[in-house]
Length: 478
Image 1 (tube, rainbow, N blue to C red):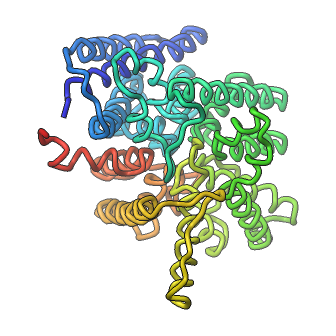
Image 2 (cartoon, rainbow, N blue to C red):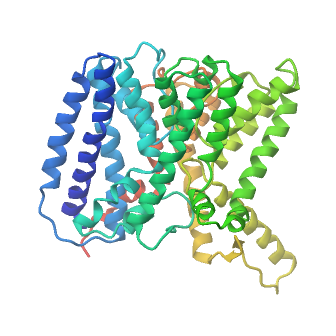
C-alpha cells in the first residue's frame, strides 16, 4: 500500500476544496456578512492540504490504492467541509456539522436544521454548493490534477463512478471529465435561467439549481420548493430532476448525433417506465388526499421525480399519503436513478439486470439444457459483472439493516429507523414519519448521526471503497 501517495492525493483534493470555499466567501462579502467562517476554514484546509501534498512518495498506484484514496478523500472532504458550519455558530455540535456536510457532499439532503431561513446567505450557499461539488463526483473534478502526480486516473474514477459497469466517453479519462463537467455546468446554468424567468429570486435560483444538479435537495426555505407555491417552478425543477437522473453518456451520444443509440438505452427506457408507472398509480391512489385529479398529478409527479432522482425536494408531505403510496415511495428509494447520473439509490441498471437474471434462472429451471445470456443495450453482460451485482445488492441490504439496528437504539420505531437508514444509504434525504419532507434529523443521538453520516458516504461510493478501508488485507504489503 503506497499510503504516502494516497495522502498526497488527499492533500491535492483538499487544496481544491479550499479554493472552492472562496465562492461562498465571495457570497458572504456580497451580502455584507462576516467572512470569518470561510477565512478560518480556508486557512485550516489549505495548511492541511499543503502539508499532505508535500509528502515524498513513489509513483506506484494501482486498484487498491485507488479504492483507498477515494474512500479517504470522501471522508476528509466531508469532515473539513463541516468547518464553515462549525465556525458559523448556527450548529449545536461538531457532529451536527459533519452530518450536514456529509449530507451535502454525498447529495443526500438530510438535515439537522429545524430552522433554515435564519442562517447567513454565505453559509446556505456553501450548503447547496456542496451538492453541486459532490454531484458529479469529487474525483471526476480532480482528474485534471491527477496526471501531475503520475497517477492513472481510471483507478480513481472506477472506484467513484456509480453503476455496475465503468466506461469512459472518450479514451482519455481527463478529457471525459472535462466533457462531463461541461454538460453539468450547461444544464445547471440553464436551470438557473429558467427558474429566474419563472419568478424565483436569483440567489434562490442558484441554490435550487445546485441542489437539483447534484440531486441533493437542500433549500434555503423552510418549506423547500413548496414555499414558492408556483406551478411553473414545480414543473421546471421536476424536469431538471429527471434530466440529472439520466446517464450523462446519453447526452454525449445526443451531442455526437447518435440519437437512436441514446434513445435505445435499456436503462433509460426502464427509468422512464418506472417514473410514468409510479406517477400514474400514485396519482390515482392520492385522489382522496387532494381536491381533484390535476392537483393530485401536480404533487405526485414532483415527489416521484424527487424521490427516484434521490433529490429530496418537497412540495407536499407524502407522510400524509395512504400507506400504499408510502410503500411505493420506499421502493423508489431503493431503485434510484440511472447509472452515470448524479442520482443515488441502487441504480436502475442494477434493478433491470436483477430482473433479467431472475428471468434467466426461471428459464433454466424449466429448460435445463438451454443456454441463455443476460444482455444490456444489446451487449452481453459477463458472469463476473452479474456476480458483482449480486454481491453489491446483498451488501446494500445488509448495510441498510445494520444501520437501522444501530439507529433503533435511540428508541425510534421500525419505520423511522429503517427509512432513516435507507434514505441515507440511498442518498435520498427525507424518510417517513418524523423524518419526512417536513421533518428533520435533529432529534437523533450523536451515535445515530455518526452512523448515518458514514452511511451517506458508503451509499455515495457504492459501499466497497469504504468497506475496503476496514479490510486488514488492504494494508498488507505485497
